[in-house]
Image 1: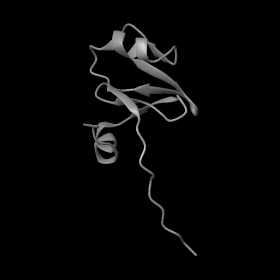
Image 2 (image 1 turned 90 degrees about the vertical axis):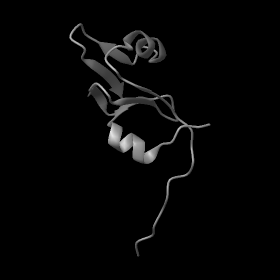
Image 3 (image 1 turned 30 degrees about the horizontal axis):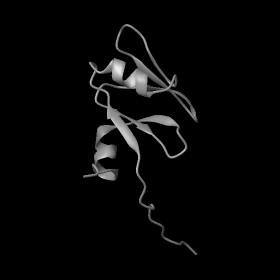
Length: 82
């Protein structure tokens, strides 16, 4: 039998990669985020190293892990806390 589930509410931290906020991202990334001089941003995730494109969100998960997320997915899943 198939059972339906929904995500529990949780809070995450995220920064959108604009191509100009590299210092902020590197400081926040605790050594898990790498950058080269041609605006390539790489994140060491639980699944291995992933590339983040400009406008992707960088998310810090519940266990302190980092990973990139495409803007359309991020905007459907998360909303800013007021």
